[in-house]
Length: 181
Image (cartoon, rainbow, N blue to C red; front, side):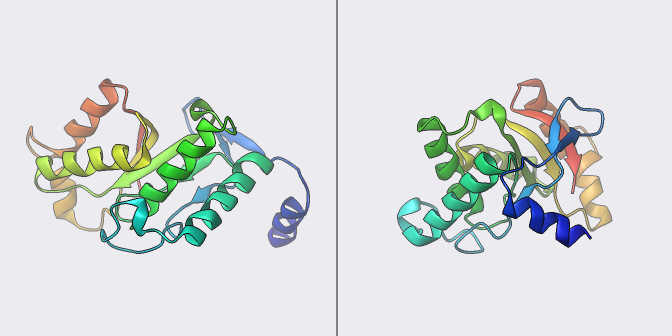
């Protein structure tokens, strides 16, 4: 039944329904755009768009336009560890905004970063996310891949921890909501 409903959504111009996300004011589409595969290459080997194949980027742009403009799927989720995903999404979304196809305030952009033992490294990763996504803020940030006890220590132990860093970003308006992935 669920697959039939999804096929029906794809075959029509119906907008994907949205629901309030938890205790936030966000109206989250019930189908979101996870962008782990929205990248040309895994790893950090691509650091500029000159290294991205044009057909790869065109495909990503076509998917974004369809999802956002046709179906109303405005939640875009990516992560620092998703290869060139943030770089490619940042360029595509910026182009859509410059063409007037979408407004930043109409998108729910989420990124994720795993905690690090060294908060200096963690901050650098966060700044890289903002730079690659070409945004001043993200609507949602999630701590990514919390698979070991030590990562919880990196998040919460002592005064120099990743949780405090994220709270600073939130206080500065660079992160609206915080979660875990």
